[in-house]
Amino acid sequence: MDSIQDRIGQERAQEFVELFGRTLPLVEEANLITSAVRRQEGLRFQLEACSDIVTFSTDEPELIVRLYRGGGKLGDETVIDVSELPQFRERLSHMRQVYAEFQADPNELDFTRPGQDRSE
Image (cartoon, rainbow, N blue to C red; front, side, top):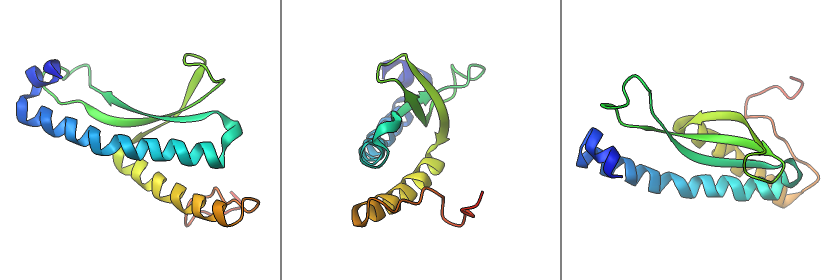
């Protein structure tokens, strides 16, 4: 935190920490849904801070959400998707819809995104 504060100032650093605090429960929710609906696939979402190496010393880090698939041990995982927060929130909204359908009937899952043709 001190490193970020030294780079971008106390106010912007506090805003970053608050955004992190609001986003982490959403990532945890995505992991809970994933573990219920797609248990066997070894998927895991993780909230991460990302910085541009060129503007590292003056620019605030960006929060991203990476989706990992792996064998159960950290390090054995592969990144299969990276989302900025608006895209992650959209994905989580869809995941909530799928989870509601899953709770109603676990045998009828639809993993397509809203508006996407199922034949693709």
